[in-house]
Image (cartoon, rainbow, N blue to C red; front, side, top):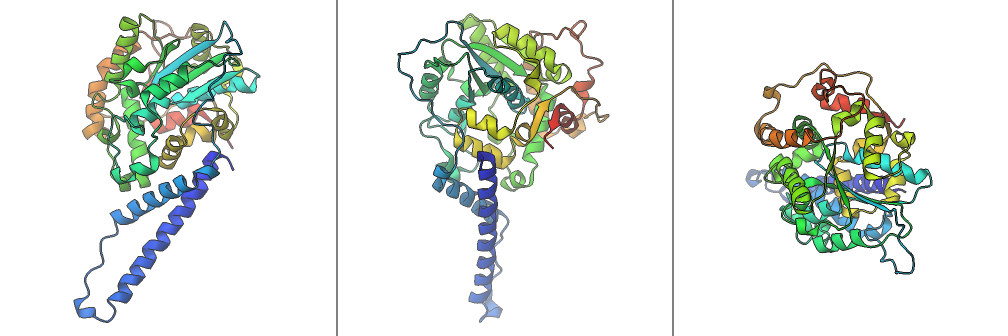
Length: 393
């Protein structure tokens, strides 16, 4: 089975076991107190217990049976110095906010492998260090589960070393990561890489994040935006990274916008490839199966597992391509729809997004840098992403 299927099967089995344990616990409770009904206490509340039990069971069994999973390797073998690195090899980093279609963009570049190109792809190694590594910068929302998902080898120095090693067979070395993951750790940015940004309107990023957190499993955990995102709500950290790259490293940052990618996928991909030196193909918007990409990418198995369980990859890996939407939702979100942490995150992030947006690459089809009445930016998040991604069926 491929890694996504493995995770789904084991998760289903673990959920079944957890339900059986809860039922057995209830039966045992009734049996123990069956002889003394007058003094029989009320059964304990099962609201948080099944959730914690389910999570512990799922992740513990995953760790125990980890050898049965066969996603792409966590590490890249150190290459001996017997082969020369291609003189025109391109090494590119893509930094993005979460929920910005960055994994879909990553899959576009992965199509080059199907066309016979030698390309090495790293998926969120610094994000793994930030959330799961020994130097993680954010407390795990479910702290008792940290022993099941932590990645002890994913230190920042370890990630930097593996990104900087030689890849003598590769025309392109591409790494995608979340922009906040190197906050306070920018000295570990890998040398020899060209840095690029994919940005998206804060309203759409955080609405999409709320959709993710509103799924049944996530609702049970009661995790909020502030529990999983940095203090600057992502965009402040991204702008600080932009300043570091341009001012300290003296490098120009190539920026593309997710709404432009949605409206003009081929044009944006071609512009990006031309700016970075990555080979371009008109077929980059049509993908193969998600399991094929996962087998070829380098990423943490535990990060894959956690994100798969919470639904982070549902659309990106269940679809077969990227296309311009043929219709737009008429729903226009109001401020009343965005309350609490969501509204605060949007307000804090908007100035940083606008500064980056001014420096983006503009598709040739746009006149004066303005979208057609900005309809894509006002579209409902779920409807827009559904029309963007070609259904796999």
